Image (cartoon, rainbow over all chains, first blue to last red; front, side):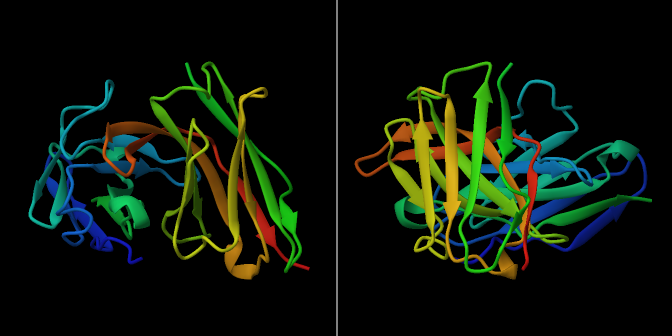
Length: 111
Length: 128
């Protein structure tokens, strides 16, 4: 079972937009619309930011958005703010055998 | 508001069995709407799904850990548990429990979707 591939780091200035990619295969990301994204600040538990590829839970700012094309899902943070500096992980359903797979994680730095 | 809390030994000796419990408060563990999962994170590394259990008792494990993992549920205590046998230093990690929403039912499985909420996590160190 291989982890989904994410860039190690992305950065942007306050107010800018950044996009994090999450690349899998047709057996996970490409095969199902069950991709979720999590934000993790240092020493804290992950927090759900996006589910079902593009849906936002209540309380998550609308500057966070998700999408998918083929085997790659993406998380975009628009209007970057200092508090968005954190690690971000994608996760996908991967069929009835592998079941669940996380991405490798991306560190977002606000310059 | 649903809350989850992990508990268990913070230090386990190599070759022994790691045992953790997740206590769920603010809601029932016996709901067809949810799975209950374990995820771990080695120091400085990424998240790894360990396994999940459905309210019915059906279990699903990470294929790379399957031979060593057992997840069970105790509905009378509103708890679910993780056992990981034959541990090594590579099993040193922060272990999280989380509720996982159950999605559509297929012929084979009820598809698990997102994890929310999560427990605060507990660090387990494997060392002699």
